[in-house]
Image (cartoon, rainbow, N blue to C red; front, top):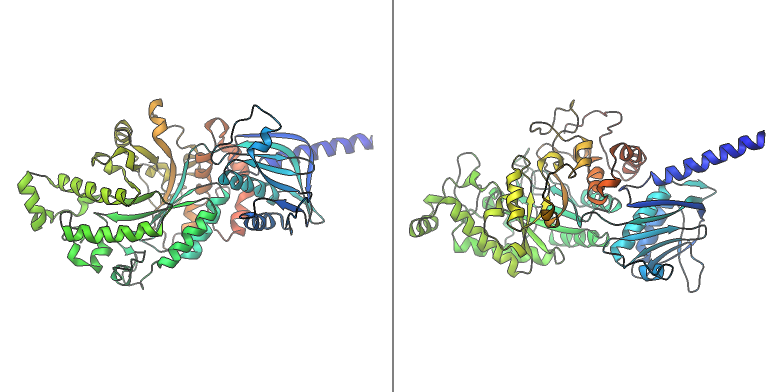
Length: 526
């Protein structure tokens, strides 16, 4: 009788062990097939990977396992191997080449193999293995994982997060901590909102007052000391992100949201508006165009792999009150019988051409869909959730689009009905809504190929401190990460919640605060 009880208990343990392993991965993989047996990772075990990445991989594996794994010498018996997909095809001739970001993790009793045909695929397989190791059973320093076959690939090529640094500044340490978290959850685009009305946050060598003057202040304290990133800091962060397979997309706002820049160089102002101050650049001045071209040229050099320079293009009408009084604007309006919208359109076309000639696509908010920009050189970001027609128009016109509507993708919106600080717009953005996006979005099938992916955005009007920024971003950023990676048929919110419980302590270990949806933790308001 005792033996039968022990067998029953052991079987239950095995079931729980497998279940815990499968349910410790975010984002949920495309396929998880459990197999017989266990893989035991012992201290001092060898890891094989190409020499240019093995040191970085070893550090991640050691951090996750708490062990001292070592780079494999020649002919060593390895516990973890990063292999090409071709080696897996040797086992099954029917297998096709693994696409960008795609991987297969085979956990066998004697070895864990990560197969991929791209560097990003190996990296994402590494993140899955690290997540499994962090929640694995450990005894006498060894880590035990149930054997399994995991096949995985991203749903969207663009899995993004936008951080507004103008209204409140975060700094290098916080940005790198964000990039680490993004990489761990397989996100790959960091949209860096570096300039806006309240502060200019990127050093431009040719125009030093952009930071020494334009970098002064923030939304809550207009006299705060100048805060910005030097070009060396920018290069360091871009390289840090690249090592984690994250592309940094800079945003330099124009022709609106230009108050900070115009404060530094008032000769390029579009005039003072009644409600928003000197909100715009002069949209028809050759000297202003040259000024902005100089800025964009330096920006391009700092982000050589971005592929895109985002230049805003939104809400320009907030500050064009005085445009008709500017000699250059008045001249072209009278000559060609133009309206203010036409003046804006011409500005957009000229500056987009500058970006394109620098070798980059133009990124901009969805207002740019009617600006007549080249379809093959423009990426639009749909943000106005209350204007679905803007998305329809952009897709119908043939533009590629990133979906980041205020609801449910803006993380400055409150996340619980009891919260007082943050935005609402006919509702708010609870965790479940962010997780469910974009599955409920009605979109014709022939448009879907133009949707590159989805993105969360954190505007910092109401997030003065890093503590509050973390509170608003997490865990909704994890929900967005899974929504961007996992196919609809594999998504289930209750299942995500069960896995999330294992990841909240990991966020804490990374020094990241968060809102706890399971206890409705007290709101951090500043």
